[in-house]
Amino acid sequence: MTTLENWRATAFNTAPNSTNRIHSDEMAQAYGFKGGLVPGVTISSYLMHPAVVAWGEDWLTRGFAHVVVSKPLYDDYEFEVEISEPTDTSYQAVLVDQEGTHCANAFMRLTDDMPEPPVRRGDAMLDSDAEIPPVNKEVLEHLCETGMRAMSIRWNAEHSTASYLRDPAQMAPIHQFGNQGFANGAFLLGTTNWVLSNNTYMNPWVHLQTDSQYFAPVADGDELIVECAVKDLFERKGVIARRDLRQRFARRLERFRRHHPTRLRLPPIEDRSHHPRREDDRMLFRLPHVRSRPEKAPYPTLPSLTALRSALTYAGPNRGA
Image 1 (cartoon, rainbow, N blue to C red):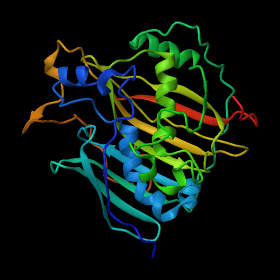
Image 2: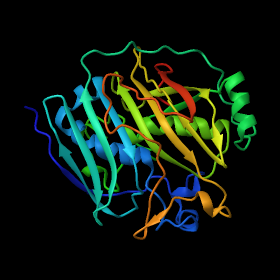
Image 3: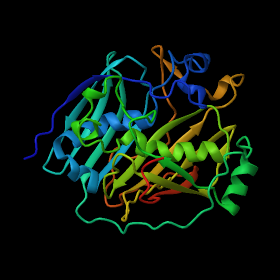
Image 4: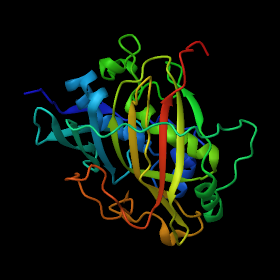
């Protein structure tokens, strides 16, 4: 049996300067949080870490991850990823912070019956000089009709998410640039966030759930093209959510596909009625009903949410830029 072990580390806010200011201390504290939130994609990479260590490149070629973030994790907080129900090809896990708060849970597995890899649609690319409209229902309806513009992103050691820990040497060896330097989960899951934010401006919002399927590793220097599409729209009482965000990576073949079932746009700070509720001085996210692990369907659906679909593909052989 593959050795799967609990893992301890210190949380690292990889996006304190993001345009999504919920990662800044100032805005997060205005909403009642203790400080800037560690991004959900980074939390996902923490829960993936035991899989990467145990299964290595096998994880990067056929790993499936179902992650639900239920409570905030803060920069410099110590945490532990606790493994349960381990097998040769799967495990469940919960991330517990230094205060004993269960911040997130996950189900990980190596996929035997791989889904068909998606293909690139050929969406138009983003114009760097184009104005970014603020998000609202009309903007999302327009994106649903016309499509979202794609974005080129290069994976390398200079990227802001090159490490999901403050000390890169503490990452799984396969993600360290002194070793193989394959792209980590925080980067891979974060790419569609950047495409979305370059198609419409939304601030603040929180990432709550991601389901993802790897097809192949993304190597140092790979240039990727990210394609997104709005699938469904839903808005209620100033809270906008989106689900089913699919992402794919390719270098001659498809690399990664992602469903991003739940993102919540937080209401204006003046409207306190829809803020996350306070309980024992800890802020809790409101989550729709979700399963802790998928059963037959690898991508559970959630009602009443805005859905996006995205893809990431290899752009070409040029690694110099």
